[in-house]
Length: 106
Image (tube, rainbow, N blue to C red):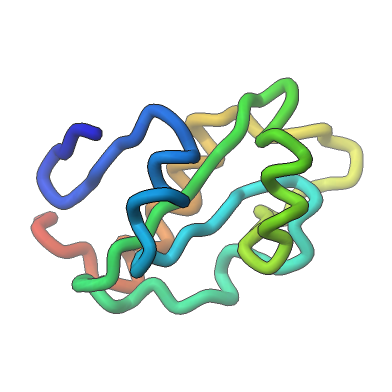
């Protein structure tokens, strides 16, 4: 794991599930049943992790299904298979930062 400012990046999803027991972990998937804006990310002291899968395959299905309550989705047209990964990450991270009043940003 390496950290940049207040943000941490992990190479594998198992790093989160094995070591971050007090963190909020959210999986961003096209088949998630709840909208990413329906969650409270406002506590700047809470560790929050968003897991994004590959654009072509998403997260491993068994991994995501075992964590169905943590699966969130970004609303999109039924005619679109998926969003570009960097765009999806930007959308979700911006919402979390917005709810925290953009800490350390001017």
